[in-house]
Length: 159
Image 1 (cartoon, rainbow, N blue to C red):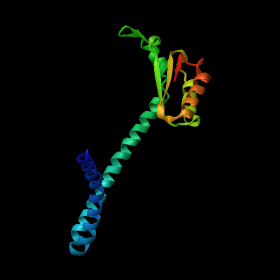
Image 2 (image 1 turned 120 degrees about the horizontal axis):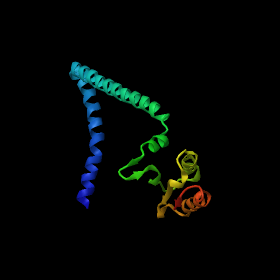
Image 3 (image 1 turned 90 degrees about the vertical axis):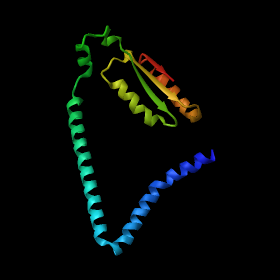
Image 4 (image 1 turned 180 degrees about the horizontal axis):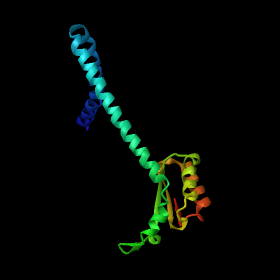
């Protein structure tokens, strides 16, 4: 047990140690080998510019794809598939899980209302709020209140 704690502590120290060593070495080397430091800083900056450019490009692609898919009527598309592997779309039930610890009603309510306002048939949605036992009685009371409020909206509302 002590060996594991010591090993974990070493791994926790490594990132900070590397950061401070790099900064300290750059400071010391700036007086001894300023050209090396200049080259390192330029290469480091170029690396981050390329990385940020790549990330930005991926974000733009993802946003464009989201804009294309946002207007898709998935229920109609699902209905148009007909029977796939012996199953029809109206035989599929969706279980929506909400793991909750100490989230208040102001956190869970918008998600449940979004399900209620969706165009998917509510009689094929099973909503589950799973509350940890250590969350305390307030979390359980909130979940029970949600169950009472939405029990007739969805196929099942399980706490």
